Each structure stands twice: as structure tokens, then as C-alpha cells.
Image (cartoon, rainbow, N blue to C red; front, side, top):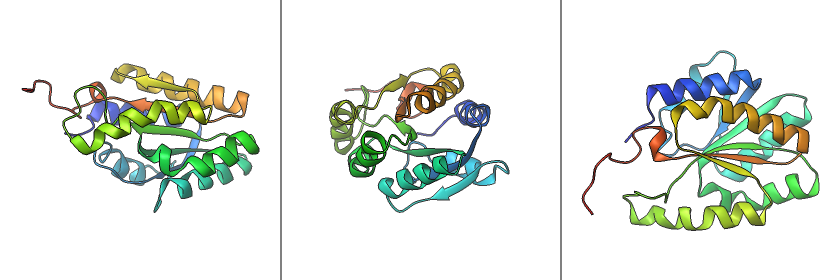
Length: 176
């Protein structure tokens, strides 16, 4: 299971088109191939973080400096980052754009990841975070650009959720 080279290319292209200069990330297995690509990008500063809340706070600080940042994480991170997201978005109107893997989506082969899918949408709704579920690689780039446009116009967070169809996350055929 891995992020496809085309998905990586489209993600980086979308970030560049959206003028992102900082990418915070908490490493996780479904997006593992994007982290070295971010770290080797000369125009995007990659910052690994110890938890999602820390990354969200850094992204908020980057926004205050007049630049753009993205938080890359597993969708379970929405629970871990709930307090900083609420304070920044609902309280201070500081937008943070997130790219998340969709653990617990249909076809999820790991029992422990199913709760991530069950809780993601209710958490996003509770935090009033609009989101787009991206199922096709060709939709990654334009979705990133539109997410930044909307987040910065509305001064609100936005979540981009990448599913298994965007890469080789889940086996294409499996027996149930």
C-alpha cells in the first residue's frame, strides 16, 4: 500500500499552485511517500511534528506571517487537533488547510482504522470545517487550489481527504 507517484506529483503541484511554502506533517503509513518528496522540495519547507495539534498551531502561525502552510496527517488527527482547530478557526478565524488520508473508508483492511472513518465527518461538522473527499488522482491538484482559495477567503479551515482510490492505499481486489 503506497501513495502513487502521480498522486505525489499532483499534491506537490497543487501546493505550489496554491503558493504553499510550509508543510507540517505527522508521518503515517498511507501518505508515507509524500514526506520525502516534501522534505526534498526546495520551495516548500517541510516540518515534521510530534502531534497534529502542534502542526495546526504552526500552520496558524505561518498564516499570521502572511504565508501559506498545509497540515498533512491521517484523518484520526482531527480528533487530536480538535482544541487547536477550534481555537484558531472558531475563535480567531485563522484558517488551516489540511490534507488527510481517509482511514476507515470503504475497503479499509485494518480493524483499528475503522473508527477513524466513523468519527471523521462528525468531528469536521462539529468544528464547522468544510471538506472535500477526493477519490481520483486528477482531482487532487484543483481541490488543493480551491481549498486554499476558500479557506483564506472565508477565514476558516478546510480539509482535503484523500481516499484509497487516489493511490494504492487499499488492495484493488480483496476477499471479504
